[in-house]
Image: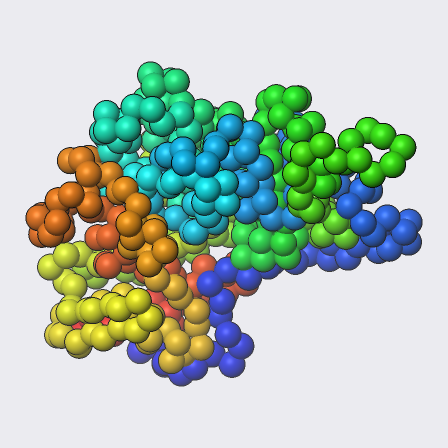
Length: 411
């Protein structure tokens, strides 16, 4: 019997895994006095990421969000335009559309990958044929159905902006994510598989686009002897110090992926016999990066659970459990889990935006589509799913305790 008691040191969802090389490149920036937004560390990480992903140009920026914002501008999105985007994702995928005063239109998720549903995307184009930009995210490190999505976008002459913030190092049919869109973005946030504590990058095969981003991200300064500005710019460049951290991290990408995969496989083995499934990673066309391990409770094993905007209630039922019960149990042993990303169409700020399921306009269906349980897939996964502690520094013994805690929630 595994003894259950709180961990002395917190087991995190996904914290930075450092190796020591990072400090060497930070010191290099310090000693050379290149502490600002130019320097060899920046040049090197742009070169290395191009080499790893196969893209032609990479521009280091202050965050994945800033990369997404400039990608939206490159795509030509203007005020009042509708833009299709993944529904079950972090808000950073969507907010840059609103920065440009455009209108996000949310596309429902499908169960196979937990990503944008190509059937719903086709339906969205039938409803809004004028749309010319699609923003797709690869959730928790699993690539979406890229071939199907690209085929639909080509049919309707739409540009793809690829949010690969969570999937750096993942591949689809042998090609790295972050290279399938016209403009693509990755993140080096503190919880990502490669981190700089912050930072992001825009990837593209267009030299013109890369140069435009370099200009925009440095306040759109013109090539003049003085500070001259002919268009709006942004302070979006990455510092050479942050780039030093990332430079020290990049050689360990495959090692980090292997460690994340081992965590996922241990969970999968440990949950055998429980009425749960893991998030989809075993896909024929894809090689995920296993960034976060998640589970989803079988429908007939879901205990009663109610969530408001800021609070929740659940009922303990024999043989059943709920995401909030499991998350509370993890908190009690000093481990960090999280709910699945709350779908964008359920967020207070976006509740009036269009939301398209494979059956059509989800907003127009009132409660009918909710009762069927298969139309609003995003909401279903959010209601039944949760993210598990997936930190590379978690020991096997700690993970065994976490598995046992989750098992006991179903007793």
